[in-house]
Length: 35
Image (cartoon, rainbow, N blue to C red; front, side, top):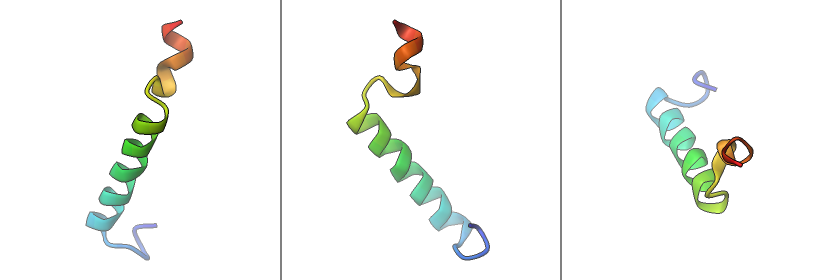
């Protein structure tokens, strides 16, 4: 991915993906672990 996109853009996309996961899935990946 870093080949087609600049490292900065890659970090921005990754941050947005994580942000969307936290917004739409408040429990996140640890949702099942907390139960």
